[in-house]
Length: 73
Length: 135
Image (tube, rainbow over all chains, first blue to last red; front, top):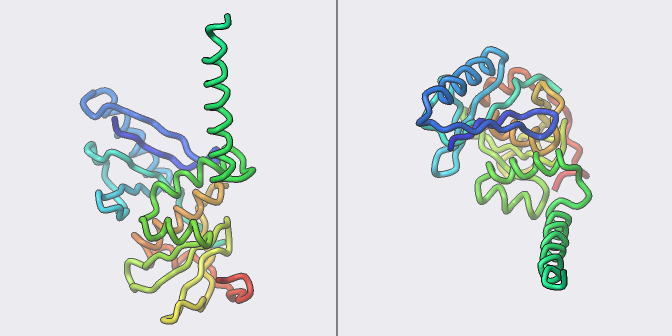
């Protein structure tokens, strides 16, 4: 199972999906694109623990974290 | 009924142990704060996690300049650029747009500096570091 984690006021919301299920994969891609349009930053973790930002939906990513865009404090 | 008593006791003991472990790790923090800190700890490198457990802050390296930054526990005015000796040089204030808990804010700041340093510094406001509160 793959997971999309969206930071929000509750801490985070998680959406799990089976990458082998075409319908679930489509839904996950649509969620990804909607969050990108809303200004979120998507980050994935490499096996070494480094985080990288991605702008394109990766169906193989096990965990994708969505961070709201930054503003000056 | 009497046969179920050991099972109830085991379940009660399990719950007490789980509550104790949560208190030892997170104190009296709310569920949402615990969720944020749990997510943060899952995404920190082993070095950053060890540093955070000791000091409630961790250091990151900016992806463009190679500069070191210290992220303290907090939701604003908690990021400091460090000099070559590890002393706070200037504060950099940038936060995620939404109202998030401390763990989420710190994780977002880490990801921002490690993956898009120039971008976050463009929106960040600077402030003078308060030396007494920095370790």
